[in-house]
Length: 127
Image (cartoon, rainbow, N blue to C red):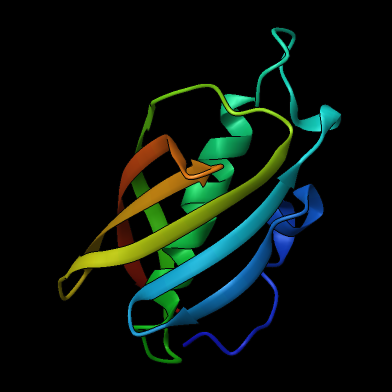
């Protein structure tokens, strides 16, 4: 259940903002600045990994009950082009919801172009 208007934790400290979450999907907005770049001057891969992990976790939260917590058990990020300073749009969705595992996908775009695609498995843990 997405009852928070923020993403919280590390992703929020980076500057990620939850735009919307519901029905197994979520979107984040992120404004990449110079502090998010690697020595090559492009968006650090760890920032992208954090964004996709966060948006997929938010998507999973819209499908679970109060007694469950999603925990990332596998994350694969495919980097399609370097990101740069500016706005990124991050979309995540639940693909398959099982009893104990949930599979998700996410996409990162900048200026209408794909930056990354990710797939993750989330374990559903009891609180």
